[in-house]
Length: 252
Image 1 (spheres, rainbow, N blue to C red):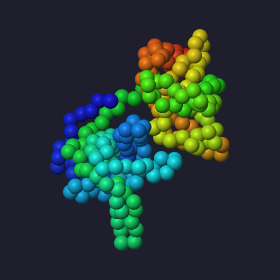
Image 2 (image 1 turned 30 degrees about the vertical axis):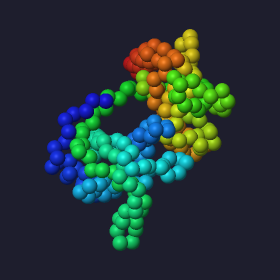
Image 3 (image 1 turned 135 degrees about the vertical axis):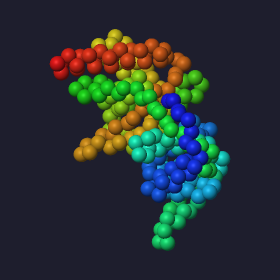
Image 4 (image 1 turned 30 degrees about the horizontal axis):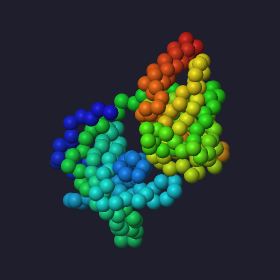
């Protein structure tokens, strides 16, 4: 990710007032000692001289605990431009939206600057038409990537892949207990490959499939010193480039 110069202070304050007035959705990255960075979705609700107020952050398991001075990074999209700012949690509180309604919110400090964010995303290749099984199990990246001996494996199917992550379809009953930011280990083999790829990933988002008992999970690859991840990424990129050329020839 590359970041441009910060927004000027007078424009920053105007921008924060505008996005809060419209309750713009935001992606909140909370830094925790227990689970690393946890990502969740919130709305920007209100801003005053000292605080920016957002929805109480939730995971599928319920409200996400927050503590004073907890570091947080907020990303949001407004008028076609991505912005990001760093701050810290001040407190959990009740925010009055109008004379009839109050909500539980989290106050974070007004940031010193807001920056224009330019994300260089990896190309994500749809795998529709392929049937690529994936085996996985939950784990933790502690101790260099080793995982517990007693785990409960599950199966899924790849829906898309990029050099930075993948999409996975699993039964909704399997994904019901998953939490954003949770770590998983996976093994799969790309079409035409001669070996399996072993990856460690973190869960970024979950999306139900309409009229189905399935869930699509978005996963981001993590560094894992026990496997040749750079080699795997090159293999993924070669597969993506080859598939693009094949589809282009077929389209012609």
